[in-house]
Image (tube, rainbow, N blue to C red; front, side, top):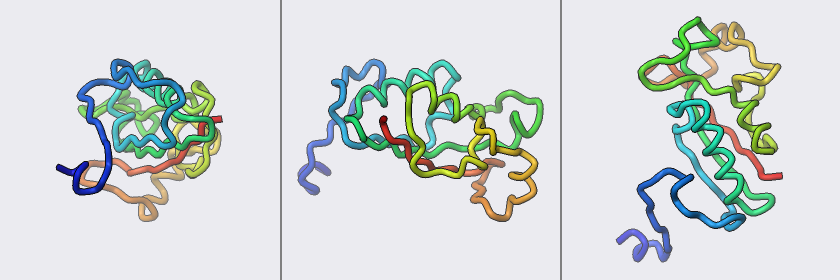
Length: 142
């Protein structure tokens, strides 16, 4: 119904990106809304590589991720019931992305990131119902 209403041809696939059989270099944009932080590190890296593979050169990947305040690097706990803080720098570098939009000082894994600075400036960040900060970044396929 929505495809008819908006004149689109969206096809939903209830699977992981690895199993979706998507062709190489065929999409201009990809979106991930609050997914990466819920995946184990290896699955997050795999998803990032497959998204990169599916985008055309110069394609953009818009994603949000939560930064959990009750897991590492804010304390020694590695994960909570929802997931873990992903090393975004490693995920970006591993799949050869370019960070187009995003504050490196707020993105875990970048040398500019400082957990004390995040906690000291909580009033500047969007905090949801759980002790987590919502982050948005845009990556471009090199």
